[in-house]
Length: 598
Image (tube, rainbow, N blue to C red; front, side, top):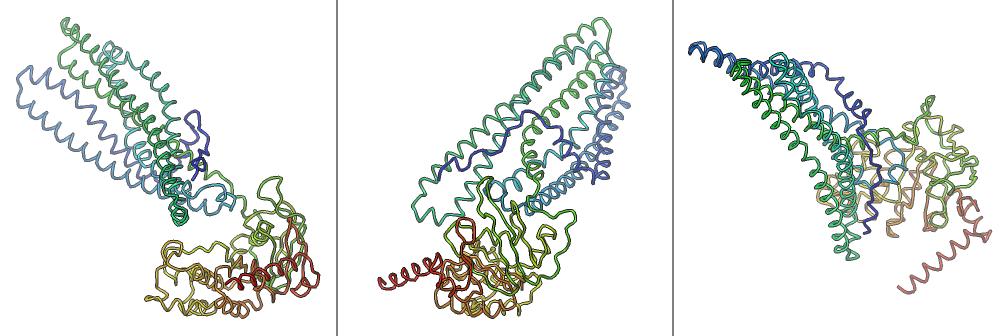
């Protein structure tokens, strides 16, 4: 499996996007109450931390100097109680903010999932499922620490930094200026490194997405992989992707890990300078020993938040790429959506009309060209033609899964663009060529067509399509688990289950795309009987390569080169001796030859 199928498909941003940060912080608005509580607890913690060095100065310069053990012990007791209170407040604020963060992640994940469900087929046509999963799971999870630390760490640390600088300036401005002498250099270097770090973390996210996409696709197609003995090739590709992921991670961590040593170096240099100047000032009685000890504590209290802020900034750089990828998806406007003045589609009668419809999946490459036709309610229309002629495109436009380039698609004389998607699609049943079953029971897979269906309705639908007998042969009957994608069932059984699901929905318009392709001849005859009975009074569109299954259709439309080249009943088209005649006779001859060989 070629590795370039999983190339990086996102652009790298050059700098931190302030708009993204504002959007992230916007998710805190519904939780103002808990955040205010956290800030209140934070102020108590900061107050205790700021007063600790002063207590140390008081104990050294007064109680120890005067030998006042009683007040020294009392001061120690007060400090213990105050710090115990600060520890409890810190614990509570972390618990509260942790709960808030999880609720925000749930909101973002639900918002992202709901939005992706609204996107058109074009979105899914151009993206591997694994990359979409990476956005919903990995990228959202990466924001957890970001939300928690933004309130529990970032805000308190900024407050602490400002308070400590003010206190140090009040205590002794000369020592304060010496302690902060290395700060400007550190800030310049930190911001220089951050630009490099951010780009490397963005690249790491993309390599993770590529790895997820490949792994998902490889295991989804494991039967193909094993059938062609391609395990060695796919393992090589997987190893290459893993190496890319690992190398991008190492490069990102390597640059990110320079933040803390940089802060520690500045911290150490500032502390040495403070003690060097402080020692000379003690000799001249400019300051007391207690003040120097307290001041050194404040220096530590200044650099510790700087380290936390730099760590948070590093974390912001690390996780910002995840936020960008999330908002990139959220900012995609659905190609197919309800118009502002869209109304609810009334109960469909079943008349379908195409008026000069043009459509192409890619610009400049039209699949349908000026297609027009009218179908009366209750008619069964068969669409035939070579692969890629546009048959499936026609039925997808009836469900408005794609937007026509020009022209109109109407049901009962109503333009599909004028009604809501839910009210339209809720009255159309579709059984696609690629039969998909969920990893659940047979009963629940059939019930998906009508979520409030009773067990009796489910059984009736299964009987109508001749699925009941094989279902009851399973030990658990309708409660049998079909496994992921229905792998426990044969291809024909999966199609029958999907057929029952479509019929249970009781649609006014029913679309069958190669619905009987994997059903044996005997089962096909039974299904055709069910179709004839259940489609009575419904408009139906049937796409079939097996032309013998559509002889009784009210009309057969032959689609070639993006247009309808022939239209009529089976007998009419045979008598024309045109393209349908050639398709039918060649298929009939092929089946006869195949039977003779057999």
